[in-house]
Image (cartoon, rainbow, N blue to C red; front, side, top):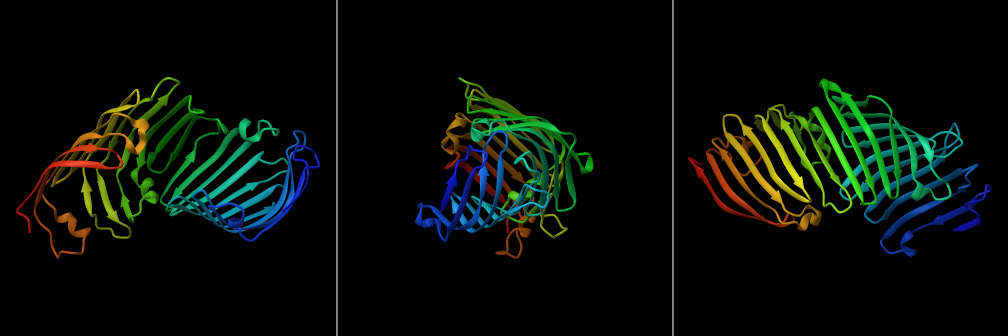
Length: 362
């Protein structure tokens, strides 16, 4: 690793690196990285001019199969990441184009995750080049487009203000419209844990947007309508509420037009009062078979997965034939199921007690 210069000077810092394995330098890291270039954080003429190539990079639970940073055809830089893994989630590709001579003035991003494609564009800049991480990036989100399997699309209605820093985040009311009269509006702010607020309004939003985050290859046709909000100020443990209606629909195996299960109308709601989730309720009808009802409370949401959980689960299904689509152990499953359980323990280790019975089962 060769370094020569001053990051704050207009001439900047020239660098050259050739690392076969980061494991030699720090535990918990791996991968190879090679490149050279010049970086300047001078306020009157910031510069990023570099070429980098990396393979199988890993650190702190983040892994990248391949990294490439190249000068752009119109000036600026283009960054390409392939096989970006965050925990158990994998993005097939992530491309960042930063055209122009001023770094980060214009940012264009394209990402692919499972069958979902995302395109967005931002215009703005760093608020203070002498302290970029703290001051952050200020500007506008000009374009945002989400395409799911080429069958459903969401597009940002108009540009909205965006401010991101190491100790703050602000997104003004961003509304997206799409296929089938869908409309989704999001707004949020965060102040280093002192002040946080998130709100969302959903109109005809497909539940299928959650499919890329599921391990099983399952498809949903249900539609969501409603709103949710959450806020926390200094001295508060958090307040909020949610009320979301679920339309009738089907659950299918990917590529199979015959539904595993048809569902009727449902509802999800809760109240959050000073860090205690109360009146949580999920109800879902199963036409011709029965219903599912879950009542729950979480007394201390701030404890995360260690928070106690209390509730009751009631299931009444008059026909279990749909299970035949989900299992391959038995040739045929028939009968009815009644379940009445109390819920205790913690979110990480829930405990169920109660009764379950099957009738006319074979």
